[in-house]
Length: 379
Image 1 (tube, one colour):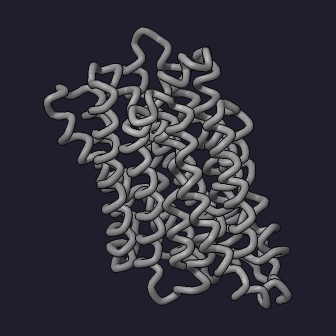
Image 2: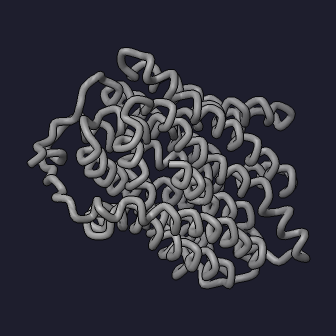
């Protein structure tokens, strides 16, 4: 699983790295407001569109070989984005990330059933740690490379390429698993609890990916310099990394996660609204609250897939369902914000949208936190 964490560190680098340089990319490629919205939305759409492929590929190739293959695709996608082929590169990178996202929770359920809370926390921590590093270092990289945003983006292919080497050594250990009969899992799409978890993921994705894509721009539009905005975002995501590790550990010790879910939702909303409307001298306070809340919210939304699954086969199918719908519909978050942000009262409209999203998160977070397994037939 250490290989999984190594991989996971680079899964979300493409989101904040691109968002941090969005004004420069927009100017360089002469992107319209609509194309900017498309570029920020396309990666999340890909997460939903390609998620159903993950169980099918893993059944044919095995989990490890599948991840090795899509890591290669991820590197190609990052390079294409870096040379200006944003749509093609985003589709490849987003598709690769989608498949890996689906498969890693099933590895946790399969290999670490006794320490799910710890491994779920490490999983989320690696995911957000890579995003934090990307958010903080992309603009300094651009300055190092003489204001070349293309080189700053392309550099993220190097660590992702390094992860491929680790999976080359990991994949042969599980070749024998490819020949085992894979049970058929059905009934999840008729299960209310599965839908509660899924809609919780939809709304969490809307908020999370909107913040990843637009947070730096929000800060810059409030008058904060690009470098300081990058630092604020990076520190906030670093705190997400810590919170994402701790949250599942706390959650596993609770009889159910319903009230815990509500608490982290409210904390995230308070932090975000503070960043948007509070005096700039308090920006660090609100970004810290946002980071802690969002980190816990992100990790618990992923951990619920494992908590509510009775075995690894159910976890794989539930992960596919949750991430297909969750990321597919969650992509409308950045899309909606991209649309309302062009209006004169854009900050007010952003606040209204987020309040509505978080009211939904409170309701479905409570429902998804019940101490039950999803109903599924395994044959």
